[in-house]
Amino acid sequence: KAQRAMISERDSLLAQIDQALGDTVAIRERERNALDENNRFLYDHLQMLKEQAAATEAATKAQEEAAQAAKQAEQDAAARLRDVIGKQRDLQIQLAEVYDPATAEMLRQVDALNALDPALRELQQRVWDAQKAASDAAKAEAELTAAREAAAKIAEQRRGLEIQLADILDPAGAEAMRRADALAALTDPVSKAIQQQIYDAMDAKAAADALAQANEEAAKAQRAHADAIAAARNVLADAYERESNALKGTIEKFSEFAKTIREFRDGLLGSNNPATSLAMARNRFGATSRGASLGNEGALSAFTGDANAYLDAARNAGTFKDYQQALAAVMSGSNSAIGYSEGMVSQAQRQLDALDRQVAGILQVNDNVVTVAQALDRYNATVTAELPVIGETVTAGLNSLTSTVQSGQQAQQSQQADQQTVLERMMIALNSMERKMAAWDRGDSVSISNETDNALTVAP
Image: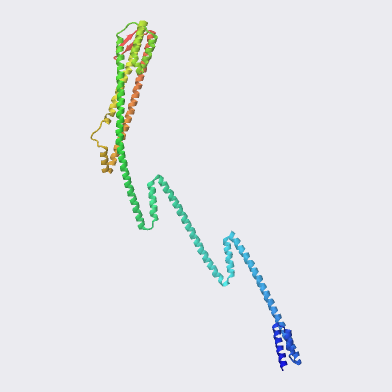
């Protein structure tokens, strides 16, 4: 019994080992050996049926696994195909985005619709239409805003150019335009009113500054006017003194020339001595006589000496005809010299009288005229009323100074005309003297007259 128990225990352990090892053959063999021989046939048939069922189950499972594998392979192929088609579609859409973004968007929408349930496609299309309408409206609004901004920028640039042009042509108008723009930019009425008050205060201050500047400039102009009148009076007084002295000297000098030559000529009329002439004395007297007739002061001073030398030479070294010829020449030259000298005296006297008349009213000082300080005080007290008066005073002073200058120019022109007249008279006298000397040389009689029109006829 103990042995059987040990054998049973050993068989149990061996069965467990076979079970652990999965040795089905050993397990079946052990189970078959444990049966009665009569029952072993049934056990074998049972095992055969089990093996057939297992084979059938394995075959079924293999078929199912093969079908599952085929289905998975088909699904994997379809997925790969869809992936290729999707990548191809993406590339088509990317290419369309380069050349035609609208077409690319349409392709995306088509793909999205195809991916949706047919019942939802119409609703999706309505959503896209609404989005497109909103996008188009936003785009139109953006374009309108951009156009308005561009127009505003152009208007601002044009306004800036107009203000720059006004700065050149009309600075006050340019400032008014800037102020108008600044006021228009203010939306708050209170701020706009304050800004206008600021502009009004600026204008009032500018007007006050301009009035003060005008007052100062007017005072300066008045002082400059007074100084200019005083300076012009001094310059005119100096010029008058200088010209007066020069004219008086001319009067005295040429009066003396005329007196000396007249006395000499009158003395010649009382002497009728025969004489001879020398060529040298005649030439010297001829040059002196021509110079005296032209107003040469040296010739006028030497006239009587050279005339006496010429007459002495004619008396001592020539015939009576030579002396008569010399006498006629000296008489004619004397008349020309006397005429020029007296003409210069008369002209200088006229110029002196005209100069006296011109400066008589200017050089007189009126004691009733107020001083510059008093005039400034009166001006500062009544600046608005005095401005026109100051302007008239300045204008009158300028007109007076202009009239004085014009009178001086007229006097100078008159003097030049008188000098031209005297020169013409001298040339006539010189030509007459030459004709008489030529007649004397031919042996013709010569008529000599003085300033009293008493004619003396001499013959060779």
